[in-house]
Amino acid sequence: MAVRILLLLVGLFHAANALMMLVFPQVWAAHVVHQPAPSHLELHFIADIGMAFLASAAALLWSARRGAILATWALAGAAWPALHAFIHVNEWFIDGPPTAMIDLLNEGLGVIAVGAVGLLLAWMRLKTGDA
Image (cartoon, rainbow, N blue to C red; front, side):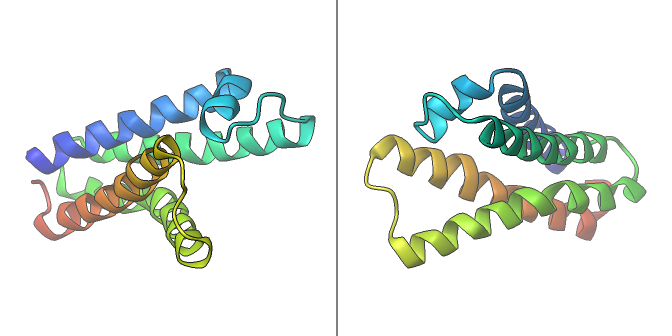
């Protein structure tokens, strides 16, 4: 039960991020990537990523329901955020972590930690079935 509740919370986090990217892309870009006036192509790219997070959120939210068979949805929902987190970890190894504290928190907690937690919860959901 606890795993399903945590999957629900991670799903809601990704849904909120996705909706912010899709509904208010300029605000999202200004706060997350410090880009006050994204171009048309960059807005399209933000929408693409927002849709990926929305799909992940939907799968994670669906996986929080009762039924062991829904555990595979957790893994499907956790895949994109975990892969996205891996990209950020790789960048940290290559370029070092961000120097600004807000960026360190955004990436460290909002991308890397949440992606890892989602993957861990998905694995636990698969392993335990209807936990």
